[in-house]
Length: 294
Image 1 (cartoon, one colour):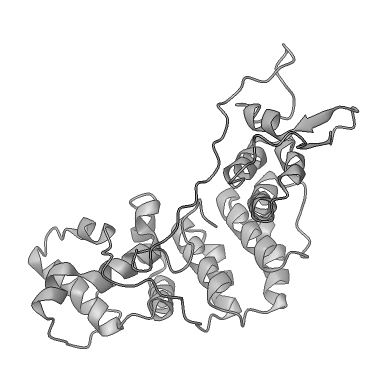
Image 2: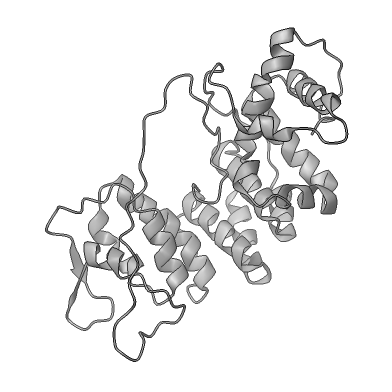
């Protein structure tokens, strides 16, 4: 990242000490939210693709690329053998939060990142495509949907989430649990945002645990005290599925059948995602990259 912009600039003492812009950029990339070797692996296996995505992300952040790269080099030069990159994982609140700017992201670039399958790079690319690149075309949806069977399970889930959010009408393969899980994230979040939690039990009754788990993770602000949260049982048994009960009965197994005793072992109730107000100068991701936020 230090050579994304190699123009020389003299940092002020404050810029060299606080590293505000560099830390804000690293925070936007959400590197700390992924396994330690995931971003370096992307840079090693696909250096040109990773470099291009990083440059587009820097452009979308709206920060001075010359200043950011100079700060990164400054930190590296303090200890060339073992730079303390961890200092960048605590962004300062001295920089106001910014709205991401639009970047030109070609369909082929998105497809290439998805085919590569690096979790962090895929998340960053589809986040850029979803938040800052309105020029992505419906043909991209068709190409990504056609590519789904060839992708690994995690990438299928990430891609399905992007497709369900960007093009809600796109046809996704219902037989693939990873694809259903990605779509369930979007649908559960939409139910929660619109206060239509009573529609969520259909997602929580999916025969695959991955789908139920991902739906539960995105059901924030659940009105547990509201009595009329029931939905017809998808199994057509004539019973009802209460949302509060469904959140308590997320099974630990991966199959669609309950244990021989006829009951699932239970997990604690999912508390729901807590939203706290963001202060005007509080650091926050410019685009949602991390696995649990998109």
